[in-house]
Image (cartoon, rainbow, N blue to C red; front, side, top):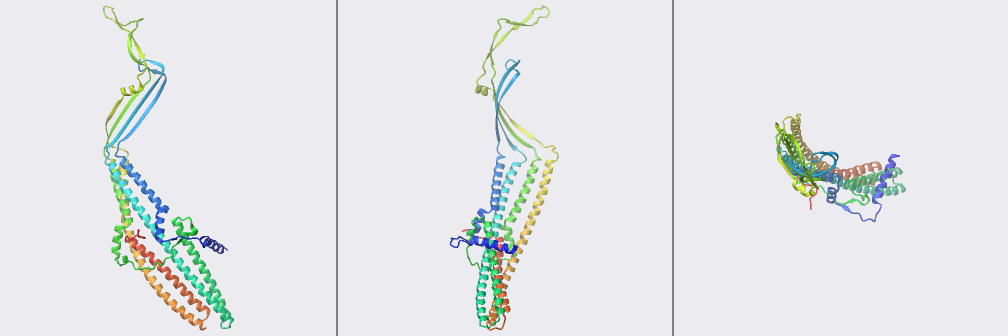
Length: 481
């Protein structure tokens, strides 16, 4: 029951894609598919965002060389018992103050950490670009494989449809022979079973073609699945000039052009730069600083003094021996309103600048541990670099071996198909004169049909594996126009 249900679901999807027979369907070429994927694939878009983030980090590293500048301002009210800054007496009053300041500092020397962070930011940007290139290569290869899968399923469907047509014709001829009493009715039943099997294979081939189209459409993020289809092109396998190179030459070229090695090298350089940054924290640092400040008050100010008429003098002591009083004038301060705010800002401004030296003596081994961790990370990156070279060499040799094997399989499948065709033609002749029965005839026909499918499968497998070797040699999946 489940198999029947799945069958109808897939048939429904097929009708959804092919329902509008009169619709004008765009036929995508492999170059259009690859270029579209490079613009719309989510993984590539993520890599592009990572690359943009590294550009921001680089600007931040450049900014570390520039002085910082910060401004501040405040206005306060002191309510209650406060010291009168004019008279020095404690009074219940409300005093207002306004202050403003500018502060700046710049690193003069910090163990070359800023310089090393800038170099690290540049390396990180380069590594991100390599990652983007690798992602583009992977997606291009995946799209090419999916595209070839559609072409294979399309050719295979044609083979199955042709076989169904031939068997239907053979069934009609057998019906005539049965009606004429030339062959037994069992032969007709065998032919009907063969036609039924052919129809099942056609449906399976249609489903495979549909699913391969859906897979590529989803990879490209195509929303109009109904009208998506690829161009009907006939790609014949051709011998690649790269396969004429020695494996050692292909490996050397791959080490030169492939981004896997460049990524590992960039990560190794980044780890080495981290060691220098960590060591910089062990060195003394010198910072230059400057600050500007000013203030203004709103309390009354002393503008002068007059002699107190009611009490013009004050006795402050007596002369020893004579007892004569020692007096001083008793002045009363005269007050007036506070000076204008901007005048006070001008009068009360001040500057502070200098150099600050910081010498790390003991910090709980944090700086030393940071250096040791960076050294461990460097050794791991070094091992990863060596492993990347080994992996690339292994993958290249495997790709070469797979391509040679695919070529041998393709050539062998052609030989097998030609032999099966001759055997089928011979069986057809013998069946026509009644020397073999329907079962033997169908067996020869099935073997020939399977041989045709094997040739198609081997052809596209060889084409794809050749593209993999060419990619290792620096030849892109598609040539930019």
